[in-house]
Length: 425
Image (cartoon, rainbow, N blue to C red; front, side, top):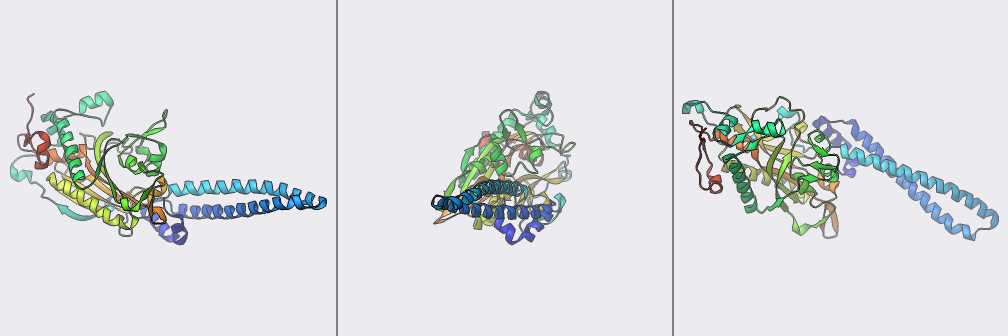
């Protein structure tokens, strides 16, 4: 959530942020009104309580006639205090509920617009000319079937559409990717973490995933637990309700977990293969930093993502995501999109978001710097979303005979194997 003082001091900036997101601007005025009622009812409650306490001191000393009047006033005060307390609580609840609906303040440099209004910041690698090489590229599913690596038919039989099995070298390729990604993250100073895949409502709400993203979340009604769509949720809530020491920052964690997404609204999109699925594994970077360092940390997370994709020898571009496509918790987001040959376009592989103080305020995570205690900044960055990375590797490194060259960074994790060969039928 944003700082209420910031809302009071510069409501026009908050309105502009809501407008850029394509969200309800009227919410700002509703929140200002609720906050004013919360503060005024709090003042009235305090005044009435003070009068009530003063009256309590006067009654024992009063004469009979005066005491009767004071007792009458005390009865009225008792009712007034109760009413003021209820009014204060109602205004406080309304303020909190409205505040939870408000997205993070969009960074002023973010391009304004919808999904297609991003700005391309840089491009890396060379897109292969398969025609010049004399063959038509196969898509990742055909390659995966030739390699005995991907089985979507049995995935659908067992679990339904958008589920899959990784088999043989497919399973080994996932393990290689996870281990290589964790090795890079550990070398960069991240603490490796295996995180829970089920979290409580306060963890999911605190990270901002029960707002506009709620339709993509799986909920277990019987247990009131949520399946995470990213280990960001568990890593953000890891220090919930804690005060951290400033000299321990930055704290950086690399979490591995299964991830679950309904993919609501994606009917008909990416139905072939494993690009858009309901369950996948991912290595996620997460940082806790001083708010003044969040923009620099954002660039560092992006640099680690670029290092990873470059090590996989993939052609990719970096985009500055537009305001209407940010997600409620992000003030700014950069995506790295890899080239997918058979689609003839770049597709998102990694993403990194600067959430500033938005999540830490919701999760009550603060930092102590001397005598000052304040919210800190949180940031997240995908290092390796496994299925999409497998898609990009198979399609970009395929050879004419259906085999796939293994990027050098993965070879130590695949027993030195340089090429994945088709299996005999």
